[in-house]
Image (cartoon, rainbow, N blue to C red):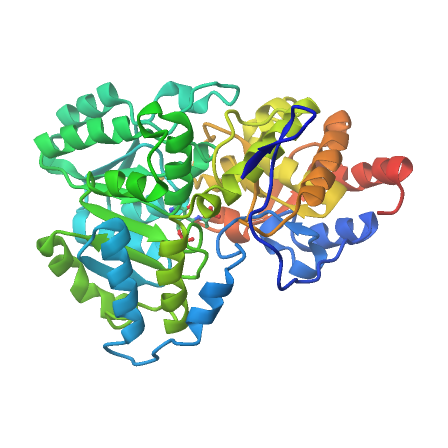
Amino acid sequence: MQIKLTNGKTIPVEMHKVKIVQKTYLQTAQGRLKALEQAGYNTFSLRSRDVFLDMLTDSGTNAMSDNQLAAMMQADDAYAGSESFYRLADTVQEVLGFQYVMPVHQGRAAEHLLAKTFVKPGMVVIMNYHFTTSKAHVELQGGKVLELCGDEAFNTQSTNRFKGDMDLGKLQAAIAEHGAENVAYIRMEATTNLIGGQPFSIQNLRDVKKIAEANHIPLVFDGSLISENAFLVKQREPEFAKASIKEIYQEMMSLVDILYLSGRKSTAVRGGMIATNQREVYDRILPWLPVYEGFTTYGGMSTKEVEAMAVGVREMCDENTASSGAEFVEYFVRRLGERGVPVVTPAGGLACHVDAKLFLPHIPSLQYPAGALAAAIYLVSGVRSMERGTISMDRDANGNEVASDMELARLAVPRRTYTMSQIEYATDRIAWLYNHKDLVKGLRFTQEPPVLRFFIGRLEALDNWGADLIKAFEADLGAI
Ligand code: F0G
């Protein structure tokens, strides 16, 4: 909850208390250099023991609630017909209004099944913006992704409150160009991840729905970050200022044909689901569930997580839960901004994003400024962030590099996991790095996988800049 202090400043105050903790370690500067070299300058390849604050992602790393952990104890491990599934299905019906629910092991499994069901070679899928796995699954089925957010989405220094909105003019033009029958579906991604966790408005969703309906194109909602989008709608869209978070979910869901999500974010469990009210859609997808995921009542999830997901869906209706990530993100963005560090504005959900194009203007796209920034942030702080830039773009069909629209180092803020003093520490070290940014140079691949290369690719620092950066750090700040 945002609380105004007597000095006029506002801070996010946690509306929960800590019951269980996990120890974390802060390696020395030399230890961090060694760990990053072993990880091939890819923060994905670091071991947890070498990471102080793990801001790689909020996926599966949010703190669960006592009620979620308690619910796990009543899991019904039946292979088929598990009561845990029916508790989840009842909750989804009550909170989100969908009659048919299919659990899957995580979000990308839902993307796989949707692409397999709807995308035929040569078809297009229209999105406000892609997510890495959503794009990969469409392309693996022979489809093409069109991203039709407004141009403002790529302005990292913006005051636009809904940079995740679909551009309606571009949407109509794309349908006219490709023909409605060749559009497999329109996908709206809540709190659009790769443009900096930016929400779309409900008015935009209504307008997209009108166009989709008129053209008989299914509207798919990626709700992995649904609670953040709902909270930001409440804050930023005057029509919903007084609505409850649950009412906002229900308004959004009333507009879409299919919801899918990664439960690893908004519901704080390891799993995912697809939900719809359309019997025909359900009947088309369901047969593939046992083939790829598991029987229809567990879909590859542990039944313990199915139970916790049911509680998570209920808990995300609580405004203090829905806001717990976004308010810390806003604080982090504000504090870095005060130190002059170029961060994506307005603050969104999921993460604080540092603009690597502005932070490291001397590094060209094909030397991976966002990857270099993520590596440098780790070296100076032990904080693990993620590259969201050209490394996250795979090569095109001809093997050519594709420069990303944006170069971001993403510092995710897992919900209810880190404290304000840890955010202050991260801010301080990133500000120090900004003052020494000339020491950071580019990266080069030494091992490049053919698909989703950002996950396990290995790179090296051009001119061994990592060692120079650590030398400067030690001279200024000492061994830690
Ligand atoms: N859609 C969105 C918007 C996501 O952010 C993610 C995952 C997925 C789909 C895929 O879900 O991981 O459960 O298979 N995002 C994670 C991240 C990986 O770090 O942002 P998944």
